[in-house]
Length: 427
Ligand code: SDX
Image (tube, rainbow, N blue to C red; front, side, top):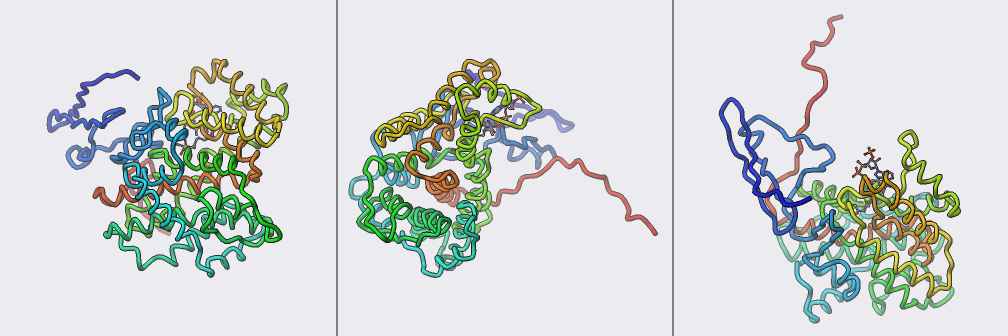
């Protein structure tokens, strides 16, 4: 993009010329401060897809789409993926700094002791059809959870806010695992205090009442990595949904339910499920050219799922980490998944094709994550539920940050293109 600073933006109208202030962040593009544009000039800015709009100040995550850089509180995602773990990264995203060992221990204990669900919550699952999508169940159950924790969340009290955030992070694996267990007719399993966060999720998901479940440490590390890579991603659609809902002062648990609903869409978190369906439909490496042609055909609604990104105009750094993890887990399990070969070939062919090169369409986080989850035994309809579980950390981190930022309720304006005033027809 290049550095075109210093900017000067002037609004010229009947009252004369007025320069709009420019705001500079620590990294990334500067922003024209248009907060007074309507009040001073009776003018709105038009940006329906928010392609050029900064909705807030945030210090949590930074993305450089051109370079393919992702930083959590300044730390590169590749380094966190190699050296850290999901709960340490959760602490970092929520509170801004890596925890000391004592802080990490306390945080892990706090999370561990909030993993249980109120027994009455478990009854909500019985109301769903057995074939309900796990994301439909998660939206419903998390929404219902807000009824159990409403009066005791004083959003003005930092300690109560942080307690609500920890509670959500702790209960999501239990809720997600119960959604899967219910959908396959198994009894819902309880979390265990002698398991790590990742291992607990796996035992609740795949454990059976008829036998002890021994967690494979390689798979526990792989799911912890998946959680870490999906934890936050600045102002994506679901995080922006949570922020807008939270700006009215709504119950934070209900706000997270709105984030789950937004993440479900195939253009967002639902893409990992769509990638597996797409690769399965392609079926063989020989069919790749036809799929590429369909993705380029404007008359055909087919898109290369897992490709392209609103911000990344380079390879999503998370995709590379997940691709390697998928290869390692498949090798560890001795699985030869033809979908991985198709995905790798598809990426190589697409990245040489002018259509994708010109539009800077590269693999994103969803392109390989489904292959890794499938190798671990996750059913396709659970992929986005895993994404929602992980992104709960980002959502609560942005909720905590928003409660410190007093910009008031988010209320966009519009460019009205409807009928001018007209009288009701006289009979
Ligand atoms: C996530 O925002 C985040 O940070 C999200 C996320 C996170 O961690 O929260 O990173 C997670 O949601 C990743 C994205 C997952 N979605 C997909 O993989 C679905 C497939 N991708 C596309 O739907 C699309 O790329 C989006 C939705 C991701 C981005 O769409 P944009 O920014 O609105 O881009 P666009 O639709 O305007 O596309 C620009 C051009 C168009 O062609 P032209 O009109 O210029 O001729 O690129 C084409 C599009 O048709 N295009 C594609 C394509 N993606 C864009 N063509 C074929 N296949 C694709 N996948």
